[in-house]
Image 1 (cartoon, rainbow, N blue to C red):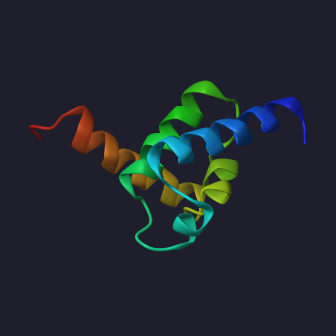
Image 2: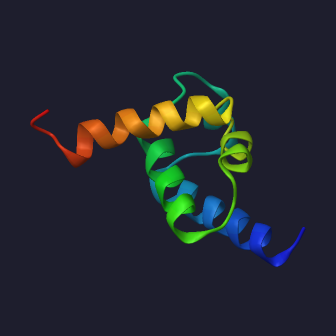
Length: 82
């Protein structure tokens, strides 16, 4: 594991702790939990990990699933009146 992936793994663990998520929560439906979407946004903003890596690490399906969940989250919370 390189330094960038180690940083992303650390951020994932810390973010999951803050949000009250455990590894088992990632395997359970519903996918696209708002906490997962928030963690996804944080990882995308603060690491160079790919969408594929994030989707696999957070057990969110494919990168396309991740993108869909993230867009839905942003639509709801970046523009609450929409």
